[in-house]
Amino acid sequence: MSIKVRNLTYIYDEGFIFAKKALDNVSLDVFDREIVGIIGHTGSGKSTLVQHLNGLIKPKKPDTVIIDEVDIFNPKVNLKEVRQKVGLVFQYPEMQLFEETVEKDVSFGPRNLGILEEEAREKVREALEMVSLDYEKYKDRSPFLLSGGEKRRVAVAGILAMKPKYLILDEPTAGLDPWVRVEIFEELQNINEKGTTIVIVSHDMDEISKIAKRIYMLSNGCVVLDGSSDYVFSQFAVIKELGLSLPQITEILYMLNLEFGKVDFTQLDLDRAANEILECLKRNKKWKSKIV
Amino acid sequence: MEIKNSLTIGQYIPTGSIIHKLDPRTKLILVLFFMIMVFFIKNLVGYILFFSLICILIVVSKIQMKYFIRGLKPILILILFTVFLQLFFTNGSPVVILGPLVITEEGVYLAIFIFLRLVLLVFSSSLLTLTTSPMQLTSALEYLLTPFKFVGLPSSEISMMMTIALRFIPTILEETNRLIKAQSARGIDFEKGSLFKRIQNMIPILVPLFVSAFRRADELAIAMEARCFQVGAKRTHLRELQFERRDYVFIILFISIVTVVSIFF
Image (tube, rainbow over all chains, first blue to last red):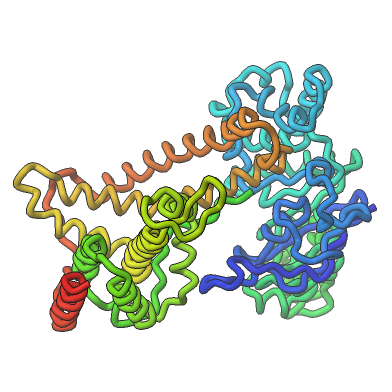
């Protein structure tokens, strides 16, 4: 069971002067229970791509977007089911909040799917807990009076309450404080460990490198790099050429390697990277005496 | 569901043609003049001449025909409805009889006239909005409203309001589409359900839309104040409008052709 995208092309305003190719022959796989990252500049087609995954943009050709062996191009497919299965959290999702209370807002999705009151309440409780918000404390508050981080969490819970099998997040931490970012990523990791497959779209290399095991890199609507995160981040030439920045760890290790050689710059784990740096400096006499 | 930007307002397409280069006031006045004169045409030859004139201008503007045709879409129902009324409910000598419905010769003529008249109105206004940026258009309007200042009409404030409104049409349209998508992702089906259900479905779109519109208005007001904007203060323009020789030539030619056609036909 997986998400399969094959040779997907999408053109905005096809046939008009402002026509723009947003996706060009993109293929992608998301397997069960993994965390996949999609990175690229603004305008590289990331958002267009993920909107295809739950049928918000319907593919123009058959066999291009296949979710759990079902081709969503087929007019017989119930898109509501697809959208329940593939939960999509938009960029700045707090903009979609509209109900009077947090509980009502989070239960909006389940209610649309025809789930009964009692059952919906249970889903709301679970969803809020997944994003570390206390149900009793928040359920009756107005979503408009929460802090930025809380709003974002409520909005994410609104999708989680639909119990999606695949959770797709478009820039989930954009515009949030650094510590809130870290917390949200921890929550996502936990959600993934409980069995939800996650796709994260971002342009922040540091964030993606910490959480995603596999990465697709988009540029001008094309997949330019894909593979394990170690592999993708070792392709410096390509990444630099695209004008994207490397994760800071990689950047440091890479510079050290250029200077002194023999440094494993594909290391993304913080402790091991620190070790790598120390080892490298110890190998060089000039620095040896200065390291305590 | 997606709301397409079928309004031609704010759909400026720069091609750098001679029509684009004309002073916006020239274009605004001439379009108004043309629209009035369309109502004085009495026979088919006049309509054909007017139509050819507009077609020539469209060719000169280097903008593809499909943009003009797209402008017809929002009023398609109005056009069909009026054509239908004229066709079947005009008294005169019958041509075709379909049961209780009678198509008369006069009806056919009137239907064609009304159709051409509406198309001419849409095409000429599209010609203005497609070749003139909203900014130019509002400054032209501000200029033309200046005489009314003496009766207390705040012309520069009106033009400022129009500029802002025009500027935010695409933004709000984009946001509406985004919200439609975001709420669809939460299982709303906008295309199905009873009328009541569909109206109810608008709430999750309208509430956030209003919230963000008010927030935007607030931010914009602060940004304007930070740049010392004051209501009623005398404002200068970065680009002063200037009539060129081509404007005079164009005005004289256009007005004389249109007047001659409307007098003789």
